[in-house]
Image 1 (cartoon, rainbow, N blue to C red):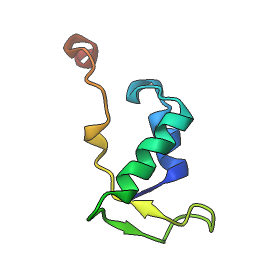
Image 2 (cartoon, rainbow, N blue to C red):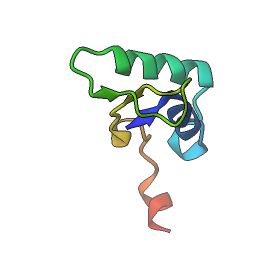
Image 3 (cartoon, one colour):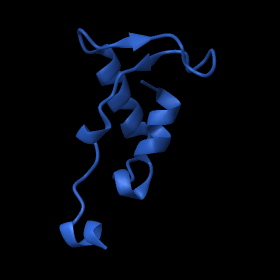
Length: 70
């Protein structure tokens, strides 16, 4: 489960694609608004209380095999 702030931070890392915050927020909102999405209101603060279940493996870009083998 990730709140919007954590997802923006996580997707901003170079190994995860270095996405722009605006694009990531749009992606998070789309995931949270999907019918049947697993959500709750147990986030770290009142502003970011809404969380959604996100499978991180779906968003990590595949790195070169040799790069990972080092």
